Structure formats: C-alpha cells, structure tokens
Image 1 (cartoon, rainbow, N blue to C red):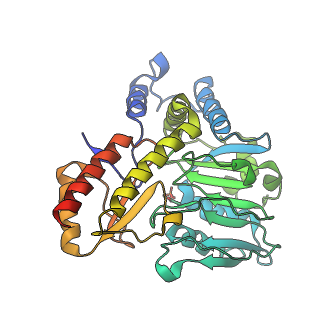
Image 2 (image 1 turned 120 degrees about the vertical axis):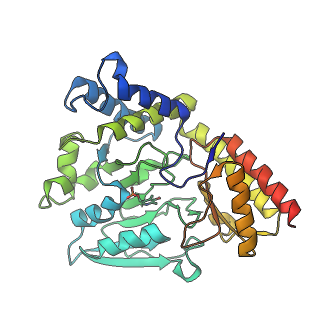
Image 3 (image 1 turned 90 degrees about the vertical axis):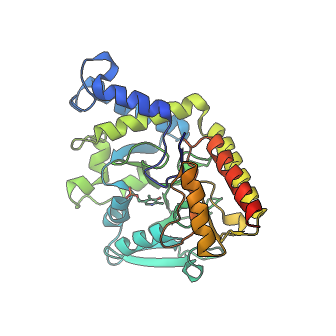
Length: 355
Ligand SMILES: *Cc1c(COP(=O)(O)O)cnc(C)c1O
C-alpha cells in the first residue's frame, strides 16, 4: 500500500482511476474510447454539462455565476486575468502570500498597475499577512486561498468592497465557503478536482461583462462562456476525470462531508508534530493549511533519516519544496484519513526514538 502525499498532480480516488481507465478502452459501453469521441457530440456534451452542474451544486453557486473549463492551468490565469481587466491606467490590488501569488503579481505588472497591499516575504511566506488597506479604486483584489508551497491558508474571506479574485488551485472543494462572494475563482484541476491539463474558472456575470473584447479569442472570457467551454477542442479526458471526481465528492456527501474529514486529517497530523520538539512548524497555528502541512527538523542528518523511514514505509511525496526545505505533507480531498494515521504512527515512532 502506497501513501501518496504528493503536492500535485496528486492522489485521486481509486474508483476514479478505475472508471477513467475503463473509459479509455470503452466509454459508457459505446465501443469507443473517451479519447476518440468528438467533443461536439452528445456523448461529450453530457460529460461537460454534468461537470458544470456538479460544480454549481457542490459549491452552491447562485444563478449569476458562469462555470467554464479552460486550458493552460492556473498559471495561464496569472496573465489572462490582468490581460482582460487591466490597462496602464488601471490598478489591481494583490496580496503577496507565497510563491504562486508572487508569480501572479509578476504577470499582472505586464498589463497595468499593481498594488501589492501586503507581503509575508520577510519571513519566507510562513504566515498570512493581516491588517492591510486596499485602495477602493482597485479593479479587483487578488489572493491565493491556500499557499501550497509554504503551507499557509486563509481561513476567512477578506471583507472588501471591490471584486474578489482568488486562486483556489490547492484548496477548492475542500471546505465550505461562500463562493458567491467571489467575482472570479480559478483553480488548476490537478490537486482537488481531477487530472492536470484543465483549469476550472468561475466568473460572476457582472464581472464578465467588464472583461476585454480586444484580446485574442482564446484569451476572451466572454467567448469561452458563450461557447460553453468549446471555443476550441477542450481537454476532453481531463474534464472527464474532473466529472468522475466531482461525482465521487457528491456521493460522499459533498463539501461539508469532506471538510470534516480534512479537519480530522489536519488535526491529528499537526497535534502529533507539536508533541515532539524535534519537529518544527514554521507556520503559526492560525495560518496553518489543512491541505499542505509543512515542517522541518533540527538538523539535516535527522531529516535524511526521516525521509529514509518514509521511503521504507511507502510514504511518497513528503519532501518539502526546495524553497522551504524540510517536509511537506499534502492532504488533498482524496487522501484517506488512514494514510495520515499511518504517517502519524511513523512520526511518533521516530519522535520517541530520536527525542
Ligand atoms: C499548483 C498551483 C498553481 C499552478 O498550477 P498550474 O496548473 O501548474 O499552472 C497555481 N497556484 C496554486 C495555488 C497552486 O497550488
């Protein structure tokens, strides 16, 4: 049994892998592979329509929200968004909470003025900046809900008057939230939604109206919406894997049900780490991510020993990102509680031995 703590692409439910592999050979008993059916066929239209309606249902979106699937991953949204909404005399506000937010800021600066309202760069992004002012003339306010690399997460939605934009790549569908408060949400699929190669985008209709019509068609949100995510050939297989994962989540009881499990996983892991002083948690309690837990150890020799133990016990993906070091344990929706308790047993054993 392998325990998969990869940060992304990451674990998906095994039932999803099974059904997706069957569909590669024979999709819904059509005798055709999901990879060879035309996208403008009733067969694929059903896949896309069901995926869109499941997103709306699971996130409890109101009638003002448009749901589309786009190419290019979350990184494409780093520039597609400002390309649509900024000009040299317009300003957007950004919260700089981590490596991904920094990348979004860099791209936005190509198109307009960027006001970085706060940053946690001074401490290697190990906390969530608080108490900042956002200029009211900002076209939008952009932030990353969960900082995948640094293991921090924003646990409340900022109360601001301008349109809210969020990169939710690594915690979408993991917890209940009033998603209708956002004008624009985007998320690469490969962490909580499905397979790499597709990006989920949710746009409020009023915000959509303000998007540019002079950008290339493939960058034009209005065209993607009016063409129902079929402006060109969509990434059909990636969208199909999203559908299967969304169905799995609904069957499990939806976002509220998965949030309970996610809370349990995070609590047992952080509590255990805190009880052994050989582990250090760089993120203060109130900012800790329930998706990606980051920790380090006192010295490199111990870290190497710990990593060896993880390898021996088939725990994969626990090595920290190179910018933070130490360890990062990703606990996305599909990771079972049993994988976390297995890791917790290893941590206790290791902690007792090297205390
Ligand atoms: C993984 C990740 C990205 C990058 O996604 P791509 O699909 O590789 O472009 C962006 N933002 C966050 C928060 C992420 O976790």
